[in-house]
Image (cartoon, rainbow, N blue to C red; front, top):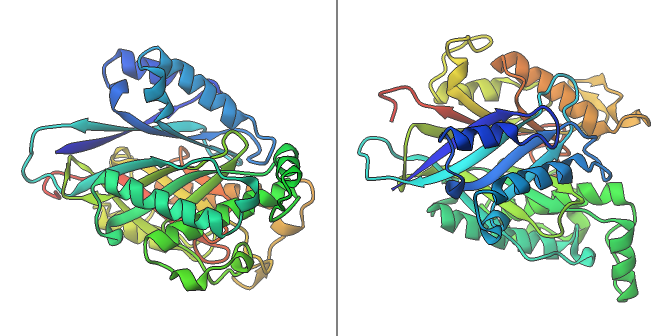
Length: 369
C-alpha cells in the first residue's frame, strides 16, 4: 500500500527553502518520498516572472543535499506566479510512502507524476501539444494506480511558453508558431494542455478538438485541469491527484467547478462531501483539516459577471489574470478562512468561461474512511 502526505509550508521569498529544510531535518518529510512540489510565488505570473525559476532553483539546491541529481530531476516542481491581493506565498510538498496494508483507510488520496519530452515551439498551442499532454496524463494515472478517469479529481500541469528566441529558432528551421506574441503563447499553452487533460479523462472526444479551437472555443473545457505556463521549462510536468483503493491514509480529495469568480457554492458542496459542516466560513476548529485548495481563475471573455460589467480585460496596466487571481482568491479565502491558497490565473479551457476548477485536499475525520 502507499500513503500520500501533503505538507503546506509558508515561504518568506521565492528562494526560501528553509521551511522544507527544517521539515526534513525534523523528520516530518522524507526527501526520498517527495514526488512533487507545487508553489505560489509573488511574481507577476507573466512571461518575465523569474520568481518561478528562482523558486525551482532554491528547492533543487535544497533537495540536492539529500538526493542524487537524477532523483531531484524526477520531482515535478510546479511554480505558479502571482499572489495578488492577500494570497500567501507557500509551497505544497507532495510525498509518497510505502506502508503496510491498513484496513479501513482506503480509498485515499493518490498521486501520480509524469514528465513529457520537450515540446517544439511549432507545436505549442496546437494539437501536437494536446496529444503530448494526454499521453502524459495517462502515464501519471498509471503511476498513481488509477484506472478509472472518474477517480481523477485534479491534474496540475506546468507547461512551456514561447520566447523570442524560441520563435526565432522555429522560424530558422522553416516552421511557424501559433503566435508570435509571447504573452498570448501562455494562454495557448495552458489551453492546449487543458484540452489534453480533457481528452485523457474522456471529458471531450478527440474529433471535437482542433488547432482552430484552441484558445477560441470556450465551450470546450475540462473540469479537472489546471495548467500554469512558465519560461523555466520546455517540457510538461504533470501531477495527477485522485482517489485509489491502492492507497491508504487519512487524506482525501474532491473537486468542484466554479461557474464564475464568486461561485463558491459548488466549493462549499465539495467541502461538505469531505466532512466539513460549515454554513459560513470554516471554523478555527475545522480549518486545520483543510490541507490544500487549488483553483483556477479567469475573467469572462464577454466582460460581464452576473450581468454587471467588469473591467479586468480593459486594464492596460495590470494583466487580467492578476485581477482574476486576487478576485477569486478573496472569494475562496472568505469561504475557507485561509490565504495559503493555490489560486492560479489563466483558465483557458479550464472550467467554463469566467469560471474554473477547484480541488480540495483534506484530512478525513475518524470514522469517515
